[in-house]
Length: 116
Image (cartoon, rainbow, N blue to C red; front, side):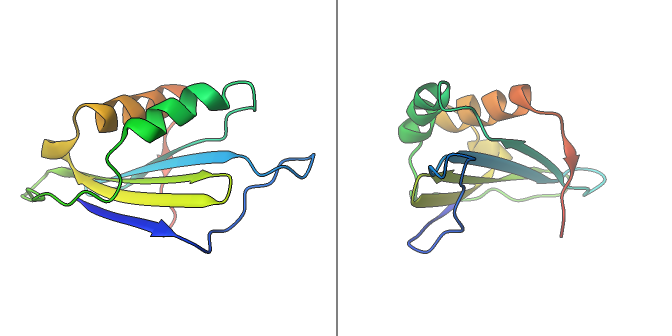
């Protein structure tokens, strides 16, 4: 896994000018190698529930990435107010809080092809 926190993120701004929450999950690899992207921008009333899922994830922790033919790799990007986090997680390491966050994002949105 590779983690990164950016001090200069692009801002996510709502109609009221308040900075919000944006979560993007990109799955790449697999047999076809075609990436899929899910994005969630929850309304302010739902943000605390999402924030709990985000805070439980071990951002920036390094561990071995088990790569191999036809395995998925997950890139998880979160912008919460002025903080941005990004983590790359191999399919073998997608468990616990990472799995919960990815599953919630996938359930909240429909997949679309990733832009390059």
